[in-house]
Image 1 (cartoon, rainbow, N blue to C red):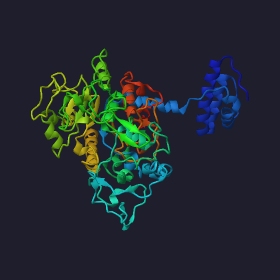
Image 2: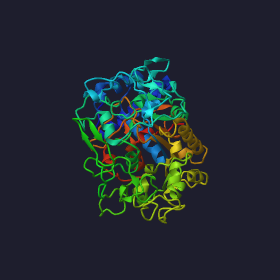
Image 3: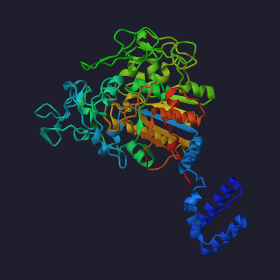
Length: 564
C-alpha cells in the first residue's frame, strides 16, 4: 500500500499517527482495532485492512524511507538531563589511591580482572625491556620488606599456600596474606612515573599498553595486588546504585595534581623562581628518571607542593617552596579559574569540607602527626588560591597557634570548612548546593597510613546520614578516587591531546534516587566529568580546554528519571 501526501508536514503527521495506531492495535482487541481503522479512514481517507497490514507498512522500506524515527538515545539523554536539573544538592566524596581493578576487579558484571590478560605481561627495564618479569617481588613497607608477606627461597613473594614456591606475576588478593583492615606499604604515584608505567609513548618508545607498571614502581610487589571490595561498605552501595567501570583519573600522577584537576581542569603554573632540584628530567638511554615537583620545563607544578597561605606540611616551612595560585586577577601571571569562581559568579552555594581542617588552621604539626587525623595538606586544592587561602600572609615557620586569618576566607560563612560542619549543615538545612568532602588521612583509604575498611565505613556513614535527611530525594552523592595509588589496572586509558592525562581507571559510584539501581555504567568518564556535570546543572561556562572538549563525557547520563 502506498500513501500520498500533499506536503512533508502532512506526511510526518500521518507517520506519527500510523505508528501510534500500530502500537495500540497490536495490543488491543479486535473491536479496538476496528475503531482505529474507522479513525484512520476519517483522518487520512485511507482504509487499513487489519493490524498486520499496519505493522507491515510501518516496517516496510518504502514507509521507513519517508519517516524519521526518534533516536531512543536522545530520549534517554532527555530523561538524564531532566533528572540532573531536578537535583538540589550534589555531594562529591574524594577518596584516595586505588585503581578500579584493585578494588572492584571482582565485582559481578563489571569489566574486571577476568578481562586483563592482554595487558598483564610486564617488561623489565633492567634488560631494556627485552625480557619479562615472571615472579611477584616481595612487597615493601617504608622501603623494607614487609614481614606480613612471606619470602620464597629465591627472595620473591611466596605463594600463600606454599612458602617454598614464588608467587607467579599475576593479580593476587592480598587478603590471602593479611586482613583487609591491615595497612600495607605505599606505592609510588607520580606524574612522569605513571606515564612510563602506562607506556603512553610520550617519554620513550612504546612497548605495550600498561606493560611497564611493575618495573617502574618503587614497590613492585604490591602493584598487582588487590582487595575485593564488592561486599565492603562502598561495594554494597555500588550494588544498590550505579558503579562506573570506565572512569579514569584526569591527570597523570598523584593527589596534588588530581585535586587541582577536580576543581580547575588544568595544571597549576609555577610563576616564581624555581628552587634547586625541582625540575624533572628523564634520560631514556639510562632509564634515569627524576620525577620532581615541576615539569621538565619548570613551568607547571605536577608533584606534591605545599600551599603558601594555608596550612602546610611541617617539612616545608620555607614559603618560597610553597605555591599560591592566582584566581583573582586575570592581568597577573598564572591566572587560573576554578569551579569555585564559577559558583561565586553565578550565586551557587558551595563548600569544601575537610577532616581536621580546624586543627590544621591552629597547629600544622599537630594536624599532621595526630594519629586520629593524619591531615594531608596537599589534598586541599582551594586553599592554594588567592581568593580562598585562609591566611593573610605566608607563614615562614611551623605554628602552634593560628597565623593571622583572612576574615574574608575564614569563619562560619567561609567556603572552606571542617568536615564536622557538614553534618551540622545537613541537620540544620544549611547544606549548600554543592559539597566537596575530603576526609582526614585516617579515613581516606590511602595505603601506607590507613586502611580501606575504615575509609569505606566512613563513606557509608556519610551516605546514611544524607539518606536519612530531608534532602535525599533530590540529591546525588558521587564517590570516587583521586588516582590509582600506583596500582595496575588492565584497561588502557585514553590519551588526551593536552598531554596531561588521563591516568588509569579508578572507581566511581553514583548514589542517588535519580540514578539507576544495581547498574554498571560503562560509558567513558574521567575526573573532569564531575566538573562537566556541575557546569551542566548550574549553566556554567567551562574552565579550561579539557572540560570544554566534547570528547570528554559529562556525568549527566549516569542519572535518569524513574517512571514510578
